[in-house]
Length: 288
Image (cartoon, rainbow, N blue to C red):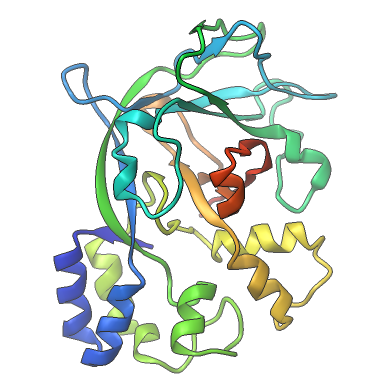
C-alpha cells in the first residue's frame, strides 16, 4: 500500500494515530526493494524485458497447449542488498520471471490464481551463480518487450489495514478484507498514506501494494480451491503464510500494460523461499 523511509512513515503514524497504535503500526513495516527504471550509468540490479540469460540446459518455459511465456524481468540477487530484507532471498544468482501475456492468442487464455489449469502460465526460474548461461533468443511469434534496466533502493513498506497480519494486530476476528473500527482504518489516516504514496511500482520483498483486495487473500483462496468462506479462520491462516516475492507494475518504458494499469504479483511461502523452490511460487494479477 505504501512505501517510504522509516522516519517519514513513523512521523505520519504519530500525526494520525494514538501513540501506542502508531508504534504498533510502525513495528509492522517491512523492508522491500523498490525497483525503478534506470540508465546505463546507474547501479543496475536487473531488467524489465529484453532477453533472458539462461543456461543451455534450461528450457524456455511453456504453458502446455498454449505456447511459450513472455519474459518479464530478471533480478540479480547479489546486487539487491538482500541482507537488508527480512526473508531468505538467495545471496547470489538470478531470478527470472515469465508470464503468458496473451500475445499468441489475443488474450483469450488468462492466467488466474483461481484456475489451477492456468498456473503454468506464470513461472519463476532461478539460475544459481556459477552456471554458464547466455542470452536466449525469444521464441518465434513472441515479441520481446523493450529492455529497461532497473535500479534498486531499500525502503519500508506497509500493507493495507485489512491485510490479514495488520487486522490480526489491531482487530482480531474482524471480517477478512474489510475495514474495522480502529484508527488505522480511519479515512484521515488512509488519505495521508495515499497522499504519501499511491504508486504500485516494481518491488522485491516487503508488503505488496495490492490494487484490489490483498493479493495474499487471492492466493490463499486459490490454494484452498475456493472452498472456504472469508469468515473461515483457515483462509486467514493460509493468507498469512504467503510473502511477496516480486511485483511488476505496468511500465510505459517497457511497453508493458497489465490489463487496465494493473500489476503482476508472485508470492511464495517462507520455507519454499529458503529452500529455493521457486517452482512453488504462486502468481496473481490485479488491475484497476
